[in-house]
Image 1 (cartoon, one colour):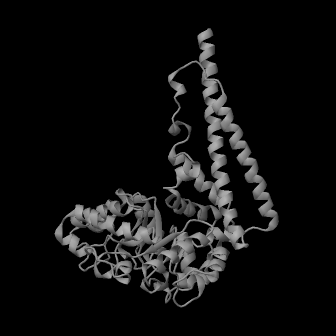
Image 2 (cartoon, rainbow, N blue to C red):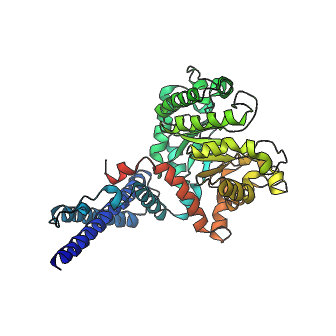
Image 3 (cartoon, rainbow, N blue to C red):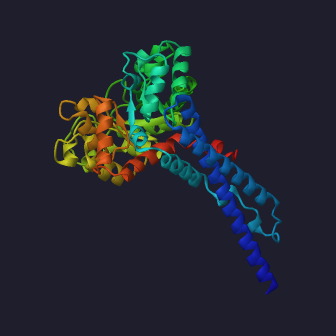
Length: 430
């Protein structure tokens, strides 16, 4: 009986210790989120009123004191009778995945709806600032990001003049944002690589050259070299992984098996070295009229990229009439996005539209943006008019056409990618 009582006491003590440690980690995460946002608000002067700043400071101080007290309590509490349960691992306290979920939920819970909506957009720096060609981030960029906390920016050759300039541009812009951003470009390899061409870097092999070689390991090596120099300049997202079956320099070829292997290794090479990979263009760039069964070879490279862990997939603006039965653009179709990409292919990463400006002759900027979110897209890429698109989605949320839960669903996918490699940094559990 005495042994049983001791075991019960030890078990309860272990449970209390784990609960306290969980609360300590959560307090640290919450404090990090508050101070991160607060730091930006002090710089920008636009996010918090004075009252909210005072409230945030008090909340932060209280959470730090609680975290310290709980940490001390955990450290000084006498150990129970030695048992295997005493060797509590970090994964038993809270898994990395659970920590990531909590970080994401905490960040989203702190965001006003205006920031949530802006976080769904990936636009050009020119759309953000109104300038003709952005090569430097200054007061105009700061003011714009304080008002419109976009989820990502897309850079092209006109934004890149030299190595020092582009490093400063991306670093300065990132530091001005309230939240982590995707700093993206399209680096496909070969002559059409945006960054390498703009900076006169030695070109890596093009997708067509890699496909012709049939050497998937070289695709990995090429992608890792691309990731290394993109990383060095501050880019964290490459939109240029072409998973379509096609001839030409931007594609790996027309053989489904070969392209699948190349796509898989390219995704691995980019993401192993800190650059998220986006597969283009789901399901195909030209409407073939084929149904899902008839597109089996076409979809195979996307399946391979999904299996390799691709962070993002771009859905094309072309219709997929064999799938949908009508001429709805694929990126505005719930059948393409929800039934096929999410359902049949099992993809739960970020889904981004292709350039919504391509649909300007059929839809207003607001209508295409709202339709894309309703169809299941997470991010909106290069709308014809950012302000009109943003205001359209915001109005749709405010009037109940789109629920805030639907916006949060997409933000969770977006922030899981953005914070995936920062869990240890945030929790201090290195």
